[in-house]
Amino acid sequence: MMTNSTLGVLSEIYVHGTNVSNAMVMTIIGIYLHAVFVSFTLGFPLAILTWLIKWYRTGDALFLNYSKTLTMVWAVNFALGAVTGTIVEFGLLDIWPTSILLFSSSAFIPLLYEATIAFIGEAVLVVLFIIAIGRWRARYTLSILIAAWLLGSLSGYFILTANAWMNVPWGMGGIPHALYPFLPSYGPDTANLTATLNLAALLLHYTVDGSGSVALTSTNFTSLVGTYLTNPWLPMVNPDAVVTTLHTLFAAYAIGVAPWPWQYR
Image 1 (cartoon, rainbow, N blue to C red):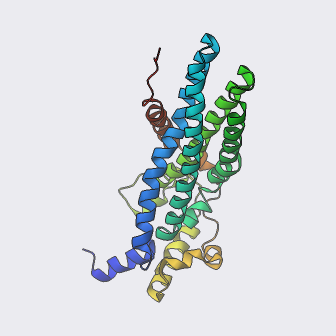
Image 2: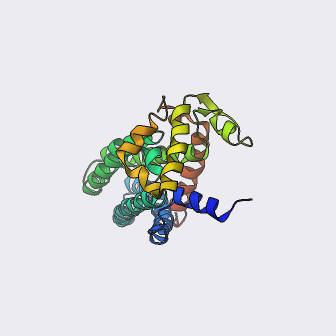
């Protein structure tokens, strides 16, 4: 049975005591709002695509008006999703400072590609589509819309890959099982055992010393831990990432498309 002192040590490892209340509220609100906005961001392009195809086939301007109106809503929703996503990141870094180690190891490549390729590309194409709709030829307009939707889905895949690794740390091999016998082995042994032990020892040292998890914000601390994963690409092929991505993205598409009635006239 854990003593109060043990629970105190564990709580200091995972949270900043002075900021946890505010940061928890910020993260909780950010996560739920972000999930809603992202779902609509992924689903709206499918509704817009359907109405544009109806317009091109029938020539009925009503469907073009539907598309333009929903495009404006899509753009605003996209911006709100970006804002709430930033709030989530601030909360993660403040409440769960061990996420700094996660972002610098297993989540580095997925989040790097999400930020530099998927998110920026999607943002550019959303603006370009706003300019193109109703003005450019059908094949150009639809191509931009589909590309923006695909990049949005790719962005979701990269983020969900990092999230899946937090649940199934693929590449840790038998280390989790050695620490907690009820856990299985997770793929090949590419994690640095020395770094894992260094992390545990340093966390305990700094916590006992009174610094708590603030130590993880120090570059000196991370250099003492060492290289955590010798193969940072493994999270991209995590089996759980595939299942998580398919389930989450299809749910997001359904949520984003469901509110719109498909037969108006």
